[in-house]
Length: 317
Image (cartoon, rainbow, N blue to C red; front, side, top):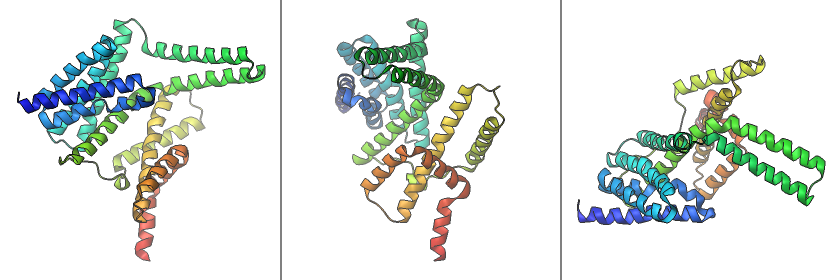
């Protein structure tokens, strides 16, 4: 191994450890957890798989010394499975979609390992532990309300019912959350790594701008079948299909149309030649606040072709 590789391995190892410690000890920086694999991605692009693996192992040992063996293995696995695999993908200069898929697989392996670890190594059901924690927190909040008389008995009863309903909704949303986490995690790491590598002068294959995203024809018709199926199930009150399956499928369907709705808005901004970054950030924030409306807009653009309508009208004029 060359001296430059050793030096860069040590530097990026230190960066990975610093990101981990900051996200662990400072609650306001918890979102930095998403970026822990990025130093290993950059290192993998610059120095290859071998150096990034050795740097990840060294970071795992150091994190274990600071935070204990269990946390060391958890965060180290994040660097190893996601960071090193993505670094290898960048080193091979793979296409954007392939990089995202590799990131998703890496995080999915880690997620499965965590669940299996709780189930078989520690003898604890991960999902049971999660919901027991939520229910315990709910009971503590209700106890606080009752002991301090902040609200009357009727309001306490309403609060209990609302919290119980929220927990049941979370149980239904849990499968889609577990499936969505690797997608979000992989996408974020690829986008951030693309940005950093481009800044330091590396040619990187990136996704085309969001404003140019269009739904593939096969996916368009597949989702049409899903929407029709959901309508029929609701219309005839079909109960033979477990609700958790329907919720999971529809959550993913809504997310896809939500993304297409934002893509349409960005396309319109480009059409009006609005380049202001602040406006685009505001649009994204408002889109999340009005997610149901944006999802409907995405459905309309997919099956009606709104962007083709206003662009065609401008050509006629």
